[in-house]
Image (cartoon, rainbow, N blue to C red; front, side, top):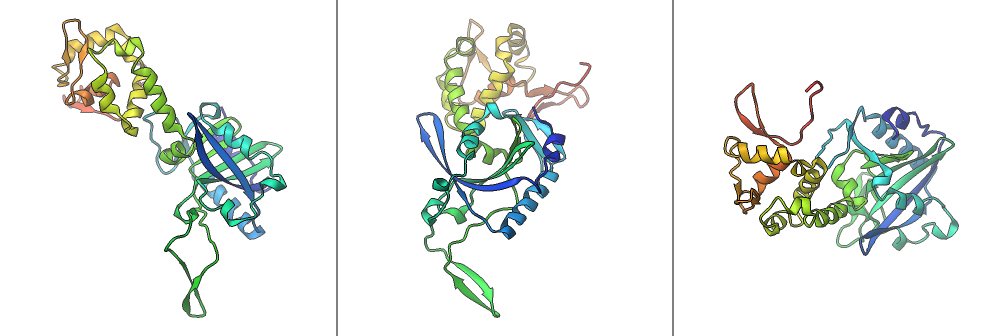
Length: 305
């Protein structure tokens, strides 16, 4: 995968810039991205180059993307493009032919997101931003401009392009600055729901419970619980007989309150589902320093342990 050095080494000033607007629909479980390119003035192109440059330079650290990982203002989550639907966006923005040029307002209004595509010999760098409310069809709202010492109504169609970007794609990697927007644009959350549907019927997962209906109701369509369920699958502690044995052994000491049947299976209840997830994520930790028990957001193994 491409690293941050490669991303920042891409020459934005000399690359050819094309601005694409996208509308998204759904076909079965596959998103469909319909892209059109729009001509921009030299001044706007210059401002967009500067905005992408500044947004890219603000990233000082990269963190491996995981379901529960979070980044901060100067970091980005990274994952392979092949783990996302980015290839569909790339394919839809590869050829700025005349018949795909925006020529009418309706072709750009109500767009879901826009992508700035920078093409050079070194490859293609794409900066993506989810469209804000100014891209929606105009209703009762109107735009006022200050001119000649007074406010006046401006009836010309206008769209706001933010100087921030939700993610960058370059050379097989995606760099995510805004995780919720990235997941929304590329329908990443939909993949979570599909993965949970597979997980809840998998014998090695369903087999640790007396019944899974309560777990299914607990997760529902909640995006946070879907992420946690997929993180449980990724960690795979439930497949480890030793881990599950220690869970039963230390259940009371860790104040989890989880019930087990005569066969050692977890008996989920509405009240204990949260703690069940904490346990299967290994997020209920006992501090040797403070002698206190904590719930944590994520875990990272310390080198040498």
